[in-house]
Image (tube, rainbow, N blue to C red):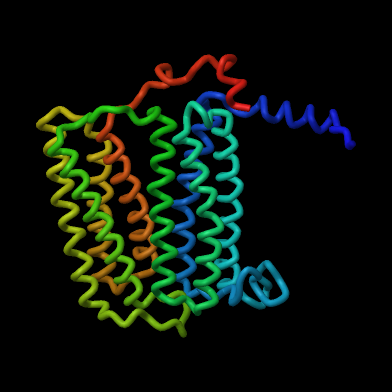
Length: 323
C-alpha cells in the first residue's frame, strides 16, 4: 500500500486554507479581471479581423504546420493573430483563479461557483469555435457565432461581478412589475440589435482576410436594418431612465446603459459616413460588449439582493461541509 507524502499533503492543506471562505478583496479583483479579459478578447478579436489578420496563423491549434507561435516570415498579421490566441491563455489563468477563489464558498455561494464553472467550460467551446473559424477560412457565420458566444460570456461575467459586489439574488421584486417588463423588452431588443449587427458585419468589407467571402447580404440594406432595433433600444432606454426618475428607483445602471447607447449610436453614424474605418468598427464592437454588460446589470437590479452578513455562516461551523 502506498503512503501519502506528508509534504504534499501539507502543501495542499496550506493551499486550501489560503483560499477565500468569504468574498474578500482577492475575489473582487479576480472577477473584475475575468470581465475585463472577456471585453479585451472582443477587442483583440476585432483587431484580428479589421487588420486582415484572420488567417495570420493559417492553421489550428498550431500557428503553422511546425510551430505553435508565429514566425518572422508571417509578419505583422501572424503577430496579431497569435497575440489574440495568447490572450486566451491569460483568460484561462484568470478563470481558473476565479473558480478557485470561490471554491470554498461553493455551499453558501452556489451562484458564484456555477458562474465561474460555466465560464471555465466556455473556454474549450471558444477554442473549438476559433479553430473551426480558421479551418473554414473565416466563414462569416462561424465568425458571428464566435462573437455571439463572447457576448454571452460578457453577460455571464457581468453577473459574476454583480453578485460578488452585491450579494446573492434576493427573493422579492425590487421594481414595479411594469418597469420589469419594460426592462426585459429592452433586453430582447438589445439582443436583436447585436444579432443584426453581427449579420451586418458579415456583409461588410472587414472579413479578416482578402480572400474571405461575405455572407451575401447587401451591406447598405443591412446597415439600415441594423439601425432599426438600435434606435428602438435607445427609445426604450430613455423610457427606463424616465421611469427611474419618476419612481425614485436606482438610476446608476439605466443611466450607464443610456450613456453606452449614445456613444454606440454616435460611433455607428460616424463609421457609416466615413467608409467604415477599422478603428471605429473596432470601437463599435467593444461598445457592443459594454452595451450587453450594462443591460445585464439593469436586469439584475429587478430583484433585491441579500446582504453578505445575512448569508455567510460562521466559517468554523461551515468548514466541515466545505471540504
